[in-house]
Length: 349
Ligand code: DOR
Ligand code: ZN
Image 1 (cartoon, rainbow, N blue to C red):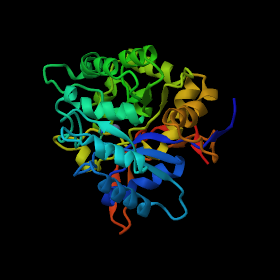
Image 2: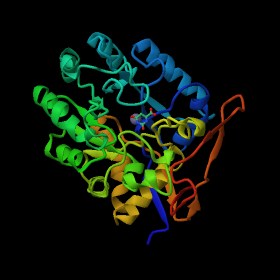
Image 3: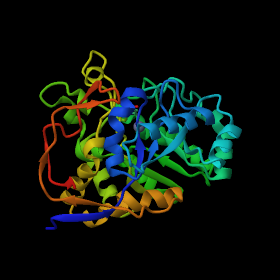
Image 4: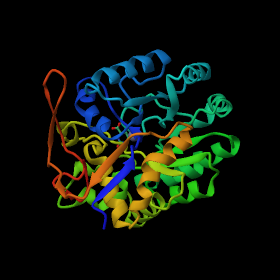
């Protein structure tokens, strides 16, 4: 069994870095491991214009630890009123690299999302023409659909017809949670890929109810049955380049999670690569971790591979139950990390 693992530096193809004090508190955790990250635009207000994206990129760079070379890759938030010309302008200027489709009200700060996906045709025509990827939160919001079925129904009702109408569209089904999503991506063209989070590889839906209500395991799309978790693990470790790393680390303060109406989101950034390494080791696929974490993402996005390297060492370490992080003014922000209180076998050295 290896005791050290050297990997090309990975990227995170889906993360929530937030803004203000939370950004300052959580950014170092991501920048410590990843060279680049696709940054979600669901701020309040959401990032819908080129000017807002430029300004947000500036705030991220300002919040970086001194000497960090982390590169944020910005995304545009689609609404019912998105102007395709604005998307193209920001894409050609290199301000944003993709756009994000949240079905309206599907999740945190998705109120301004898209209420009529079929009406997006002019936007999708533009994306297809310019090669700008569409990142999807793939869940229907129809309240009559059981929450555990919302991803599968989204694929059937919206994604399959969309890709039929736009066969050249580059799309990423984000944070997939079902065997249905795995099968759909496998059956698709190379233009359709998916990101997989560490938490959906580790937990099934029982985790939310273990010994009582566990808000730290609540995220959207919600974790599903064990058979789905196993399908995700098989996909992530299969060596299929259409499945790659995206943490969906989504920090909310402990108070916001542990409240009468707790927020959806799992903060996995502090030990993300260690969390994936544990899964790949359990699946006897450590030799495939580097491609999943550091190669398939850049090749989908047409970006160069990172030249830097990271080293993981096999030294079990207990994850703190809580993290008290600080913003630049020294104000504390309390967060519960994913794997809180558990021991992970690998550590980033
Ligand atoms: O659990 C989630 N949290 N899922 C999302 O889609 C959004 C995210 C957030 O921004 O908190
Ligand atoms: Zn997300």
